Image (cartoon, rainbow, N blue to C red; front, top):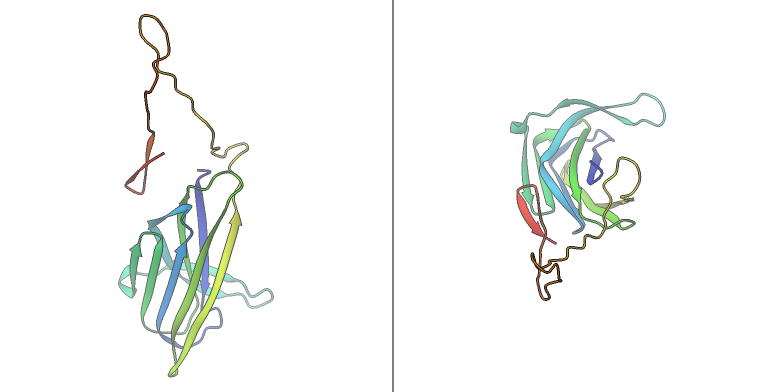
Length: 171
């Protein structure tokens, strides 16, 4: 679907010992966070450059708490951790062709009594919604005409609605 953006956060790639790891992300208002797509995976780190994380098994939902509030996501991994994780999720894009969608993610926790976090990263993705296989935005013109005379009827108003993540939106 050309209207779905996939997001990925690499967490604790340094493999620090952290208690109460909290991951937050807020998406721009030109997209809708699809809360049911949020997944947390255990990860391993590569043994040679570029030391990228590799996704492993999905973490049991009992090992973390997930809260979704509109376009804001909060995940707290219970207890002490010392390994990396990957968080993946998707959003439904409302942005027009050529607009940018973005997110604002942060990670915090306690590491041997000291606060680790406050670091903020912004990931931007230019989203072009035209071309083969993509959903394009466009214009729809509806003319209401008299059944018998075929003359246009003035003052008629229409609205279009669509449903995303169980929420009905009117255009």
